[in-house]
Every structure is written in structure tokens, then in C-alpha cells.
Image (cartoon, rainbow, N blue to C red; front, side, top):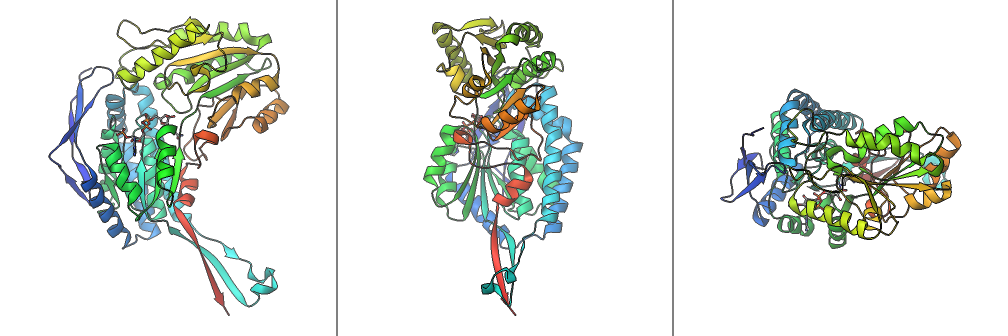
Length: 476
Ligand code: NAP
């Protein structure tokens, strides 16, 4: 379907500004230009930090912040179809998946509004020790300072919401740098924030050369916190360079799921097929590795493969499409090279393994894989998953943990005892039982361990990260 190209300026100190340079946004499916956006550099980034710092000098009371967040949620709900189309056009995300993202974003804003209304400190029981006798003390939660937010291409609206909404709830102004491939969704969100009554300077959006914008965010001391979602490679380097700031990292995964012999195999196979290939596997918790108890392996594969082969591959703007393109040619070439390498090392292609006639990578399932293959231990970020049998639960845990990543993992089993053993043995930030590890509701504490990150996102948790506790002691 043809798209109408959108032209967007940048939001800087409440004004929509041009910079004299433009950045083109192209559909990953058709290659068509779907928008052009004013391109920013170091200069605009410094002006954005100035504007954010000025905004914070006149704090907004909690009721005003909550009201703006609630009104944004209403606008997001009203504009759901427009948001979904923008996401789909620039990210190549199937429209039905993009609609889910748009719907979830409204709940992210509502959860953040609730946090703004209830954010409070603690009363300290001072008479609990002789030293505190005669004193009253409490803690207050104060905004940490200007937040630098850097977001990835794969959830271009809701992951921006997960940075902007809690920051505003906490009372922090934001300088946002969305992914260059998907800036239109972020700028649409900024338009809705302005429409909801957010005053100038509280949200500034810059699109442009990542290193130039990133360098200013790292170097300017007024940016007290950087919230980064993206690849481990970029994220950990950013944290090293910003030693005196708080740097919150939400990074990748090589998501495993274990299927025990006592599991409901039909349910496990359906959830695995849907969640290994949704958005062509470009979710940080897309199922990448399926480990099945040997006694159930053949039965599971017999149920799983037809469901994978039934997925509809094609134009992301079509309502019926389940799987669309990956984000660009480089990603496509890398994924196909990893498949070829695995085949050369002995892997068997059960389905897919090549592009279709339109050049889209077919949903791919590989068997006979070993733990050291790239497709087993690194993040594929493409429409690919592996299936492997195991002989004992301990072996399954070891295989699942055999990656530097640790975001979410899953297990399908009828046994509570096995589920609890998995919850303690799997080294991941979240363990999902009888649900795909791709599941996320926006109020959940969501985040990884090991190379996958160092924080939890979800408005309740992010607001705490974005505020500092101040102790107040009063002597009677
Ligand atoms: P990416 O290449 O790391 O980019 C993420 C963001 O970082 C983009 O805005 C990018 O800008 C920016 N960036 C790149 N180099 C930078 C630098 N030197 N300084 C400052 N910013 C810089 O990741 P992606 O390909 O967009 O996203 C995919 C990755 O995100 C996957 O690894 C996925 O698992 C992860 N992810 C994690 C979560 C989570 O919640 N844990 C959620 C979604 C995605 P440009 O676009 O301009 O290069």
C-alpha cells in the first residue's frame, strides 16, 4: 500500500524547528520514503539541554504532571490508528502488531500518571535507636535532573513512552534521541504531549547523528541520568563513558523457552510460533531457543512446524500479515550469514532458512544446533528460532543459561515444583511459566541481568530510578 510521506520538524524548547538539513525515513518493506525529519547535531542538543534545565527550574506540581500524563493517554487512545500506521510505515512492523503497541502505550501513560499522584517518601522511625531520640525524620523523592533518553527502532512509540512518561511523572525534563530509522513515532508522541498541555522545554526531541547527540548527553553535567534501550554493544560503552551519571540500560537477549514433557504441547507450540516470529523476531524477548524434553520432542516439533509455516509473510500494512521485513539490508545479510554459518557447522533447516520471492526472510526453524553457534548464544534479532531436545531438567537450565544475556526466559510445565525450580535456576530478570517469555505488560518490572542490563523499566520502577531520596531530620 502506498504511504503518504510525513514531514517533521524537531521539538526544541516548545518550538517545532528546522535545521537546514533533512533526514529521510524509508519503509523497510518497500524502500519508499515515508517521511523526512529535520536533522540535529551537537548544537541543537546543547540548546535542548539548556531548555530542559530551564524548564526544571520551575517545577510542575504532581497534580499537573499527572493531568498531562492522563490527557496524553487519552490522546494516544484517540489517535491509535494513526500511531499504528506510523509505526508500521517506518519500522515495517505488521499493522496488527503495531496496533497492539499503540494500545499498550496508553496504559504506559496511565500507569505513569498514577505514579505521579502517589510518589512519596518514607517516615523514618527515629526513636528506634537511642541516637534518634527527640528527632523526627522523613525522606522526600526529588527529580534526579535532566534525563537523556535514547531509544531503539523496534518499539518506536511504546519504548519512547517508557522513558518520557516516568520521567515526567518523576518531575524530570527530557532530551530524547529516538532511533534514526524510526523518528516519526517519537515526534508524533511529542506532538501529543504538547497537545496534552506539556509546557515548553519539558520534552525535546532530536534526530540525527547518534554519536554527536550522545556525546553531548554524556558530557553535559546537567544531564544527570541517561536511560538507554538498545544493543548491548552501544549501551555498555555509553555507561563506561558516563561514569559520573546514572546510566540505565535495557539491552538484548537470546531468549530461551523450556518445554517439559508434562506441558500442554499444543499451547506451548502455538505460543512459541507466535512469539518467535512476531515483528520478524525483532523484539528483545523474541523466542530464539526452544528446548524440549526428549520424550516430547517429536510431538512438539510436529505441532510447532505447521504453525510456523502457516504464518503469513508479506506487506506489513496488510491486516493479514504476521511477519514482515527486518529493519534493513545489513540486518538481513547478517541473519542469512548466521543461518549459513550454522548450516556449515551441522545445523538442519526444518523450515525457512532463505528469503521468499519478495526478499523477506522466511520464518526459520533450525535443529541439530550446538550451544557455541552464533544462533544459540548471540542475539539473532530476526525471524529464527532453534529447537533442541534435552535429557534432564538440569541440562535444560544449563542450555538456557548458556548465553551472556539474561532478560526473560520461559518454561511450560504442569508441575509447580518444576516451575519453582526454573524460577530459581534460570539466570534472567524475568521467568514466565506457561506463557511465552515474550510477554510483557507495561506495569511489570521489566529488565535484565548479566549483559542484558542493570535496571527495571515499568513506570513504578523507572520513577524510583529517576528520583533521588533526600533525608530530612528535624530536632524537636
Ligand atoms: P542500537 O543500534 O543500539 O540503537 C539504539 C539507540 O542508540 C538508537 O537511538 C541509536 O541511534 C543510538 N545510538 C547508537 N550509537 C550511539 C552512540 N554512540 N551514542 C548514543 N546513542 C547511540 O539498537 P537498535 O538496533 O535500535 O535496537 C535493537 C536492540 O535493542 C536489540 O539489541 C534489542 O534487544 C534491544 N532492545 C532492548 C529492549 C529492552 O527493553 N531490554 C527493548 C527493545 C530493544 P541511531 O539509530 O541514530 O544509530
